[in-house]
Amino acid sequence: MDSTTRLRWKLLSQLAMGGALSVACGGAVDSDDPGTGGSAGGGGGPAGGSGGLVTGGNGGVGGSGNVGGGGVAGAAGVGIGGFGGLGGGAGDGPFISGDVDCNSCSAHWTTCWNWWAVPTNEAAPPSSAKCPQSYEIPSGALQVCTPQGWGEYFWGEPVLVGDLCCYDTGLQCPGGRPFRIDGELRVAQVTARGDWLDAAGVGCTDDVGSTTRAALSRAWLEDAKMEHASVAAFARLTLDLMALGAPAELIVASQTASLDEVRHARACFARASELAGVELGPDALDLTGLVVGSSFEALVRSTFEEGCVGETLAALHAAEQRRVAGDESVRATLDTIEREESDHAALAFRILRWVLLRSPEQADVVREELERARLALSRESRQDLPLPPGVDAAAWAHYGRLTPAQSARLRARAFSEVVEPCVRALLEPPALDSMELAAV
Image (spheres, one colour):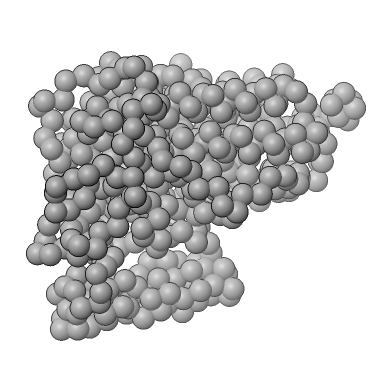
């Protein structure tokens, strides 16, 4: 039985025993063609749909890097200007080269700063290099897609182009249960520390080139940051459940999941540190604006997006990563993550089942969230992006990583073959039997 079928039956059996996802605002966000030549500014973006946020075109490469014009906003939307193009004359940065699509977590582009202006974490380890390593740059240093809930990250070895330090850049694709406050993805920055590492290490990496090694380390660091943030997400879930009078078994399962995520974070930080050659761990997590307490509707929306979709996709993503991995310690890490993330997905469906027994009208909210997730993943599955330049594909797979295209296809398949059938089972009339309601 393959991992997809196994997880589907696990979730369905949980429902029988009673036991991403959508962050895009409406409308397009693709930039218009960039300005060209001289000191041309970028063009305006296209019109957005209801609630859409539209980014203008980038400034022309080689020009003065003027800021692009704002796009035409849709209803209740916002038009913002594009960033300046490469070539200077528009301050110290950031400067962006390449397309940015805030409707997909698979976007990939280049971000540059003048070397003296690259932002770094306060706790970043000292370095004599002209360009800081990508893991030293705060996740909040670039906020192109933050209004839609994504967080940007920087990976790979920096490239010095004249006076510019340039970095491969992408969007954090929430895996597992992401931690958001007011729609903003929150993760801790990375600092030099060794108390968040487990004991296992990766195998010999002497034959892996520096570009590939840096990209691998950064990819595992992003996983580690998301797993670390999931500890907070489950802590908040526990309090939300208690505020709504949830049964003890759901509270126990949520608390247990928090401890699972600590293990996942430590394992991922250890994989990243081995590849980077330096001990790395999380800095403080910003909780500004956190509100505890929830309504049934809010719990349904967050649980569907973060649990029923996010945890399901995370479990199957880990299973596929383990399948392609050759390194035994990486396979062991991924085996644990897959097993425990599938437990978290099952918990999410049990929570929804409990809510629907208490508040049957929330079934319409579940259907609405299902459609939102379907649209988001449909957009994402059309992405066919390559690995970053210079990354060895064989080494990438050996150390448990999927290409962006593989990840997008897997997520679409997981949604259609696991999430949708389990939601249909959840919403069947027998699942809302009034006699069961009286027993809750």
